[in-house]
Length: 100
Length: 91
Image 1 (cartoon, helix red, strand yellow):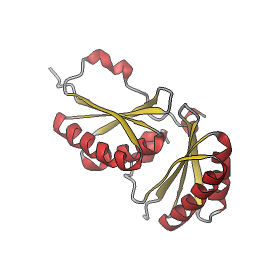
Image 2 (cartoon, rainbow over the protein chains, first blue to last red):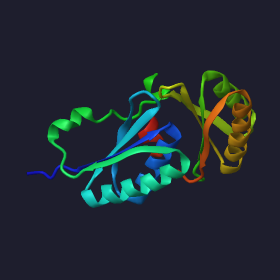
Image 3 (cartoon, rainbow over the protein chains, first blue to last red):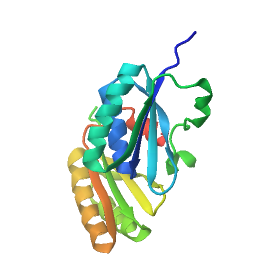
Image 4 (cartoon, chains in turn brown, yellow):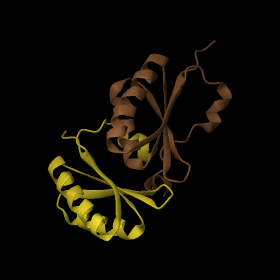
């Protein structure tokens, strides 16, 4: 049974903090960035996946990095996400340029 | 290859964002990459260029935004991870 990769999420208010969080995550551990979502009210969430240890260290690094730049609303890790969750993961990129 | 630095100005409202964008684009050596709205009036502008120009542009943009409205944050990532822009903006 293929091991389903863990999923880590960091939610911030403001996109600058999210960029900082994502940058810290990509540098902290070998995690794959699934994309980010915006849900209004200035809340944006970034999703990463990889093995549990990598996701854990990436998310903790992201939380401290983003807190210096903006407001971290929430951080969460799902070690073994259900496979139907994949429909919740965002497509890559949600900026204007990608919508052109 | 000198990796580009990335600069951000995040404002509430369009007016300060345009003022800041104008100030930033006038600084040499930077280009406006994307403008993203995420609700609650937050407008985030992303610029790219060499570190010195990006820092100068972000400072100028922050000042312009502050004078004309609410500046949420002004930030520079000097050494971004190489996948950051592609994974965030789908470039």
